[in-house]
Image (cartoon, rainbow, N blue to C red; front, side):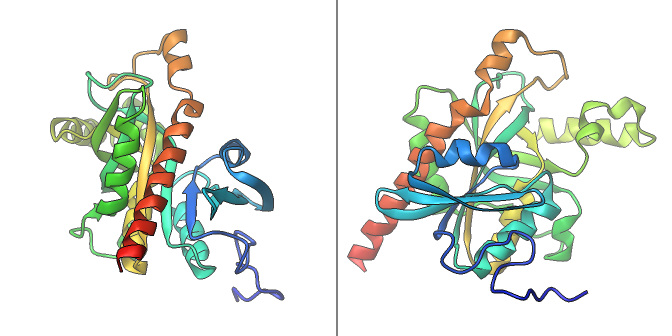
Length: 262
């Protein structure tokens, strides 16, 4: 199947050169794009196709965008590939994740330094031994913004998985023993949360020579016990958005300072 279009837009996300800034937020849910764009100056809707919705605006005079990726590494990597094609080079994953440590509560934030490659997409990019690691300078900037916020924040490794229900209902899977053993291993290793995109984004960014980091609103409990109404309220993704916006502002400030020195 040809990937060529009859115009200059990318095949899946339907954006072209000039439609997005170099700095892009990557939520999973298209419904979160306008929510994030409302923090921009002069936000404008760009496109909507399949799971991909894009808005563009400005932060501190710098052109920035938000594009939804859908659920999981395959669709997230497609979004990154096509955004890089049209000029983006700095990405921040913003979303929700499940707690993997008893001391990490719903409503805490996780800044993701690296991801366990418990998914299949990245094996099409690099051998499994290659680590999925966030870009250090922009993660450091995001960490500063997060620690300056009023929320509790944790720095660490996430588990990027392919199966939501494999995590939440492992006992009904024919490979339940394997799933339980691996979950316990990730926890024992200190993984802070479980999500479905970071590994794909970090490996793809490494291959493409661009920058990626991520911040997650943490939900749930490692033992899958129900959340209280108060915990549900505390872990709404909206509470993480001001931190993500300030993190991107800090990245922009540091980039400008580095360019001035250069």
